[in-house]
View 1 (cartoon, rainbow, N blue to C red):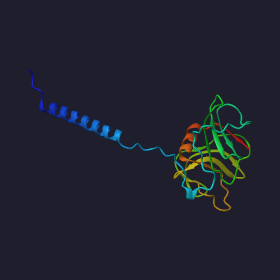
View 2: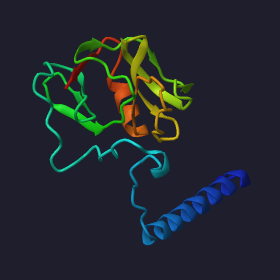
View 3: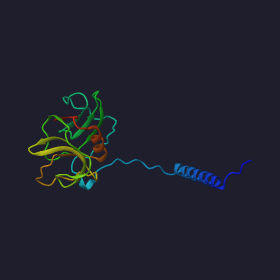
View 4: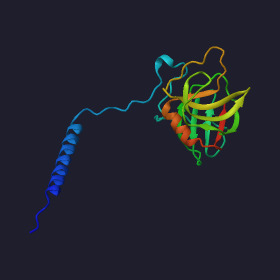
Length: 187
């Protein structure tokens, strides 16, 4: 019979011990309180627009009539809401947004430039996931989310084209809205 080297015995012993500790911790964790997932919401002190509604709801808002067909982003000026619509015309996600002070005209646009990394918006707020799709009266119009999740009021008299959303919705729109994606703006 061959003797097992001491180093292998140590490694085996340490491995068995580590597995026992992990199993014990897993049992303890399973017995403890379970945290509830909280939706990312802008801070109440900084919010001036409509409070974003949860992305999933029992009866999500219907995609507006006259918004086109196929894969697109739909932005309703009257509802302050965005829909991410797949190629089969099914809404994949919808959420409330906070518009800037300059609205794009109703019509069809195309996503052009995109900026993922944080930059400073025209209102001085750090923003990310910026998806540009229009220019009106010299003001760039783009979807974005504030890095801190808030939507502060635009400065008095400021002309801003940022359409803000929660961080989770900004990330989803960034992923969906690649360059060339159609954006339908409706009343």
